[in-house]
Length: 118
Image (cartoon, rainbow, N blue to C red):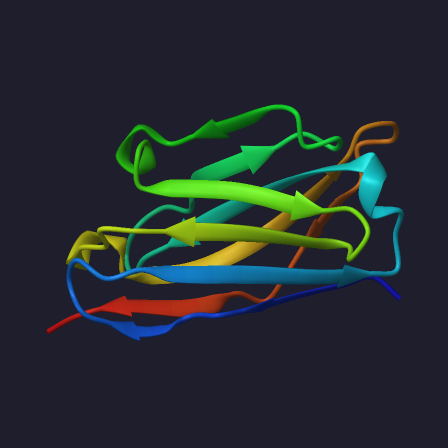
């Protein structure tokens, strides 16, 4: 059974930091590119960051460049998103996404809520 379980969200003050984790199981993690998306109420889901299956290549939304770092541990089947200098516009549900590099399978987690507020 495929599982992607996000954690690490919560309430943080503007300017603060958070580290999100996405623990996965049920598929060959090292064969999947991983991405973090976010969705705020009333807004479209948007890509935050992505990382290749081997961890060598990363990409970020313009709004997150310099403030986010995506990483992965293929030994732990986990992907991380470190975010700094958070502001209220970063408030959203953050979702983990896996895309198979061979067959193109796509899996989603349930998301973790990040709320930036004073």
